[in-house]
Image (cartoon, rainbow, N blue to C red; front, side, top):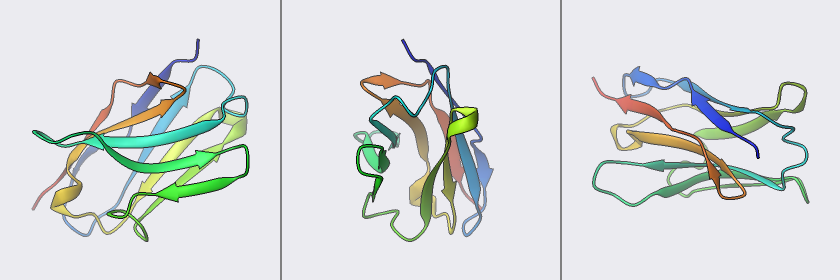
Length: 112
């Protein structure tokens, strides 16, 4: 079974950028969908971005469109989430997921 591990979170000022990484223990090419979700304190888990290998489609949540970019490095079995123009409301734990498997999450805090 594939295992996922996120990294790259931290504290950043509003307007700043972060790149999150998700390391897969197995080939990501064999996985149909790779996605990022986030969960802020007291809120439900929210969809952020998804890459569907079956058609090469990419989807983003409305709140991050135009600011976040999901990408993959097949050779390294890595999935990335580039986050630009960060806002305080982006503060959350960010999770990488595929096929019902979730990583442990990485904390992103946007604050001045």
